[in-house]
Amino acid sequence: MALVISTDAAHYPEDRIARAVNERLTAALEAVDAAELAARERDIVDERVPDLACGMCGIQPAVFGLAALRAMGATRGTVVAAATSADAGGGSERTVGYLGAAFD
Picture 1 (cartoon, rainbow, N blue to C red):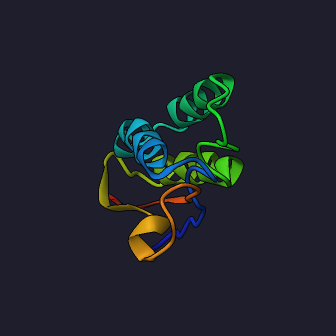
Picture 2: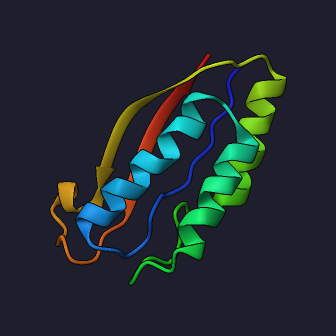
C-alpha cells in the first residue's frame, strides 16, 4: 500500500529562510506527528517573517496525510531531499521550499 502527499514548503522568503523553515518542519515529518507539524506551521506563520506566506503551502493535506500514515502503521519518516527553487536555477531573493520524505 502506498500513500502520496504532495505540497510545497515555505513560499516566497529569501533562500536562507526557506531552508531554515524546511529544517523546522523536518522533526515532525520524521516523527510522523501530524499535531506537531500543524503546531510548527502555526508557530512559523505567527512569527510574521517578512515575505514568508507559509511554512508549508498545503499544510492541511500534509497534516491529514501524516495522520493517515500513522493510522496505516508508519512510525518513522526519513527526509530524502530538501531544496529550494534557488537550487533549480531561480533567484535566491524570493524562493519556494521543497522537502521529500519516505515513511515506514
